[in-house]
Length: 367
Ligand SMILES: Nc1nc2c(ncn2[C@@H]2O[C@H](COP(=O)(O)OP(=O)(O)OP(=O)(O)O)[C@@H](O)[C@H]2O)c(=O)[nH]1
Ligand SMILES: [Mg+2]
Image (cartoon, rainbow, N blue to C red; front, side):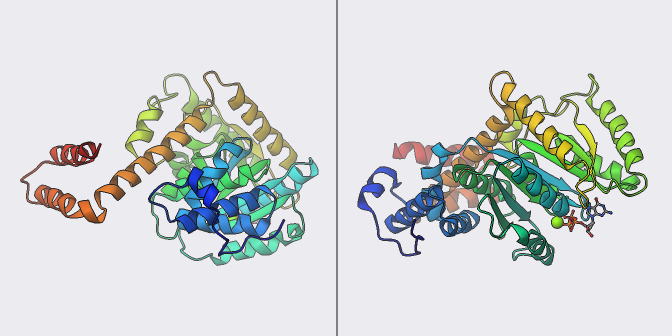
């Protein structure tokens, strides 16, 4: 399969079937060509499409539309936790374990804090170099490019591309423990939260933001003193969190939460398993991969489909609805009217609800 060039020849037939009116035809042709390349195993095309996804271009839209029907098989695993807990080391160990089982794996290392790839990720790259010649491994870092709040959506879109390209597992490693990292990790089918031993009060701090999205909790650095005790403390803590009177609090209306916010809400897990690993030696990694597999089986067996996938799809679609509505109302022919409506709210001549109704009425009048 030839590598797909940047200026791929337009394919009029393909445009006719997939082109939305507003998207430039050459962007559509390029997106489709990159998608075909990715499906055929062309890693350069795959990398280019992921860059387009990261930059949210029209090329990405065309490629994603082509690839969506092909996706849905991969197991998306989020890996998050405190800085220095050993996420990257653990991911490297998991890659080895997954390859040993004959499956393929892609890694997206997400760094919401820096617009350019940070030193930590470059260091990780070096660590991953042993997989450079393995076609069953694909590693990619992704920065936020200033799209605050949209990182989870971009990461999921990137995962869709890798899913369609045939990778069995996709690991989403996030750097740091801020809100957007939690959202990225929570968008996965299975979310693994890493802790290091002897974190003391930090365990409490992490509990609030991270443990509530955990499907599996890993105490890494099992070779350090206190690892087993930290695991025991976490098990005790999580038993309290998951006990019947509290289970589901704040999560009962996951779909509503998705509709209202930019984040990806997910159903509250019953009671996450707590495992101990030593990423540097590989101790516990096979057990972790087995636990990840069991969690996926549980999802597949869940009554009424797969709630986290539904939440993910809803979040993506609602985000696009918002983008499209805003895009239309700010298009050159409507922008003046839209701005006038917003200004009326600023002057308190119009309340925000009336303004929203008025703007929707503009769209409705268009038919
Ligand atoms: N003793 C011990 N050290 C470990 C283990 N896992 C990772 N480390 C070390 O901990 C340090 C941080 O590991 P990383 O894998 O870079 O941690 P990270 O969570 O990816 O860190 P950030 O990306 O900076 O958030 C490195 O020096 C690792 O060698 C472990 O199981 N035992
Ligand atoms: Mg790291």
